[in-house]
Image 1 (cartoon, rainbow, N blue to C red):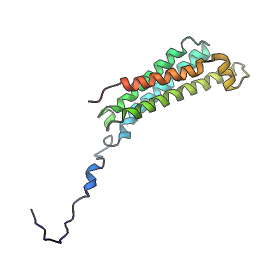
Image 2 (image 1 turned 60 degrees about the horizontal axis):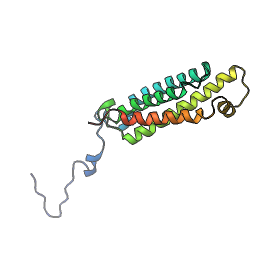
Image 3 (image 1 turned 180 degrees about the horizontal axis):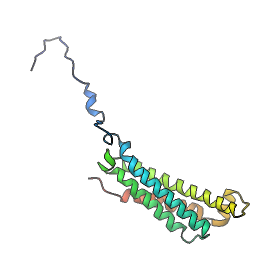
Image 4 (image 1 turned 180 degrees about the vertical axis):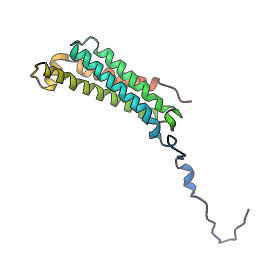
Length: 167
């Protein structure tokens, strides 16, 4: 150990704040965003499949019977898949905050419902419909339109919070 003389300046190898910087030893370790990539891709797949199921039930079968069930199952699947990002080490990075995961799951579920509504309307237009988007949806489904979005959002919130617990 070397002693320093009074008034002599000693230079540190790295700044003290460097210990708070994220350590990125390689791909998949470090940033929280990298932990979100895999689960987000799988959640997007669940959203696309759920939106396709909503279009099938609402447009092809022309039924409101299963819309709420499909929306809830889709939202729960999205939330459960995204909840994997909140577990440390899952997906190869640091954990993502549960609140962020929940908000992302809700947003993805609602976007999937909106996309399904647009494709349902396009299917009806292809069948010879003449109403605009909002007129058609309200005439054909009424309060089920906001109800489906609400059920999907609640399912996504539940799935995001019921997923794997942090260790």
